[in-house]
Length: 466
Ligand SMILES: Cc1cc2nc3c(=O)[nH]c(=O)nc-3n(C[C@H](O)[C@H](O)[C@H](O)COP(=O)(O)OP(=O)(O)OC[C@H]3O[C@@H](n4cnc5c(N)ncnc54)[C@H](O)[C@@H]3O)c2cc1C
Image: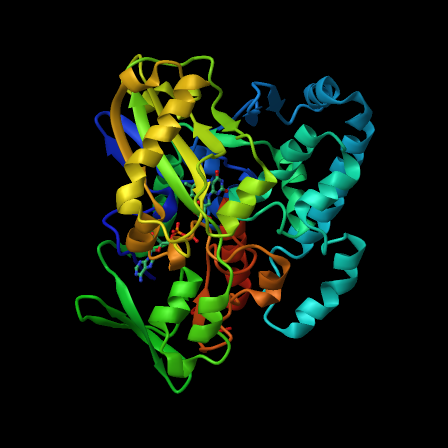
């Protein structure tokens, strides 16, 4: 097994930036479904807890509304009820019913279907009755609105699809399963940062005798008579293989790595007209002081909710924003020099379909975010910054080879889910398999791990010859 990575370090979106004594995890920070990691470790004959120290985070999120109201979102049933009552006592019963619905959706959407290959139309047809029963045709926001009335609670219970690149007003309500997933198994963070998980995964690959080659960009998948025969690298080398698994962005894989002559479904036109998730503007920064009152995960909602999402997913860069603020040093102070804090703040923005020149807009946009943080949860921020770097959708395109610079690949709407996504077992080329955010079931760490689990069922075992 040879793993080819074009960057000079492993981890992809979860890679790590070390800078001026600070450790910045580049991407995923809300680690849910730890059982998927445990299972993966077990499959490799090891125990997760021997390699990674995962800590439960409380609250899951501190959600701050634009008027200063704060909602602590957690897995503690009593505390959650108290928070719901504080905003709207009459919504308490509806909230309980919403959670019960989320559990039912989880049982089908995650437990039963998250690991199904979905490579025939029949697989899709079979689940239609379940989808109708679970009201999957509704969006996340509409389903939530059936259970609670208060506008702020509707936001609190509907923002989750943004964590996997979806607009709560367009994403299928299947994604409300995240509420149950978090409630039941918690939100976690590894000591040492999410880089500790990446290092743990490298240990597993090593233990299996796999080889990781960095600075090795695949520029083409060799296809002969409809079958994958290997890959070509940027330096001209060709590596022969009977099985090729692409963890590159699946839209990019088909658009640029698989010859057009080998594609019938994922034509250039289909790829150009598909809908892609939003982009992200991420600012990583360290402060010379700590902000002990700031939670590990904060969400700072802006003045507009639906309208802002309309702008983001409608390819318009808005002057206002809603932010996610990460303070990993709340859980592991060793990620910053003593007495200092490491942060990143991310703002969902349009992907590169929008006419935005990030080479010019990045700094003014960063300054607007800095001013907003100074005015709200990080007073005096401007004078406290000791290190800083940003990532824009251009970096997602140019470093991670993300189609349209989308942070989460295809947008998770119903007509781009399950069978409608690029299949895990390529429908175009024999011997080619797809894994990661752009295939089934979708983006986010649990989705990506689940896609790997699907491959376990469909990739032939070279030893057993199945
Ligand atoms: C800022 C941010 C925050 C996030 N927060 C969360 C969160 O809190 N919780 C959560 O669950 N999820 C989160 N996500 C989503 C999650 O990180 C991703 O969905 C997931 O990591 C994607 O994994 P992947 O393997 O599909 O892609 P990647 O991690 O991008 O891996 C693909 C790899 O392939 C390499 N590559 C691409 N093309 C080639 C090529 N041609 N040749 C060689 N190598 C190539 C890339 O360099 C990259 O290393 C977040 C994402 C971002 C960006």
